[in-house]
Image (cartoon, rainbow, N blue to C red; front, side):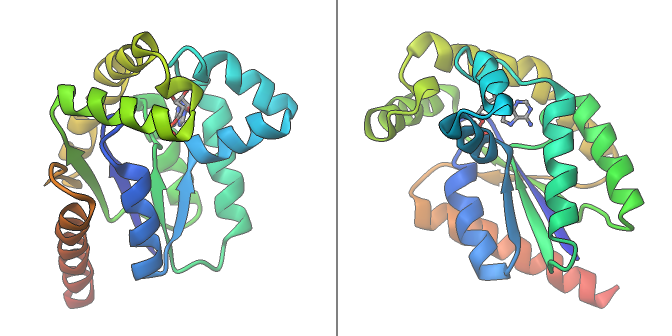
Length: 197
Ligand code: AMP
């Protein structure tokens, strides 16, 4: 299996890019945000719980997303690999994820981080809110809170994965096609390195 984590702040373009990468490299796209939004839209118990956090731009409890990822990986045990989008987002999630991967006899090949300036993130999220109507993109306060939560809780993962030699920056500015080219080139390199070793 070939497993990649797509990392970055809200609005960095993870979702858009992950869909394209999944298709090009035949990976299963696992977005905890998408899965939670689906649960919210069906009004499930899990959705009701998640909404209390997502509406405010806070993280849902670690256990909720860890269980989602575990169950998705179990359901796709014969996949060629996964692209994780929006997970892990805390140190506790990353630790549980490492343990889970070891249990599955798997590893994360790389964590690719899309780098975008903060004000550009805010602009992108506001534009997305206008077209998608996503509740957490419609309020500037919620947008700013999500960026704050990212800085406090998710940024420490940069060190976590750097120590494991897995963290790689990718310029996330520019248009969708440009960013996709950069990411694709990086993934091709990673796959080449893997087949050489
Ligand atoms: P996203 O679509 O990835 O921006 O996620 C939307 C919202 O879902 C986030 O603002 C969080 O409230 C929640 N969420 C998604 N993934 C996670 C995660 N790994 N840990 C905690 N909360 C998450």
